[in-house]
Length: 205
Image (cartoon, one colour):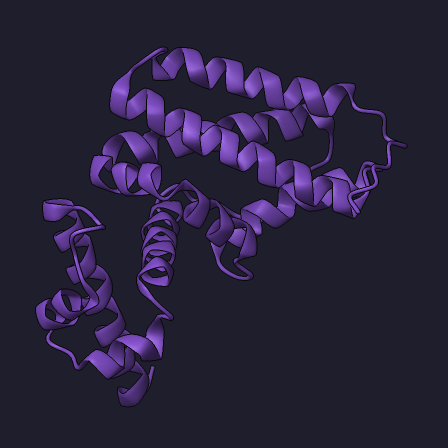
């Protein structure tokens, strides 16, 4: 990384870290962009070099933290050979997700209050370990006979259901604990996929 790129990366990280610290203390709604740039020690114009607005910052902050966590679980893109392997794949990453959310309560609270921003960021990312994980699952389902459009929509719904349910269980433990929610989420997703007809085609127009 050259000096210019390194400097840009440092400013980006300062903005991300400063925003996270402020959000942790006061919540997202009470923190302004002016406060974030002041805390990061950068000009306000610099903020808009990296983010469209505060919602964009929140989505990138969540992706940044999640991507760094993915680097700690030794994820490696690989070819899924069978449905049994696919189920094990889903189960392991559901466990990783719950571990991540349980050990990062501040981030979990941030995700909980911005589920739509988080889910959109996850399904729209085009690089990095989170994209690799998403694309590996998506590719397996398409190769198994599901239409690309059906897979994309179903994954979007599954991701939103899993994230919102897990956040609620972790932060409130009501009406169900995380262990119970996790078990039933896994069963719901895998049973739905297993029971679907491979020739199914839905009209989303």
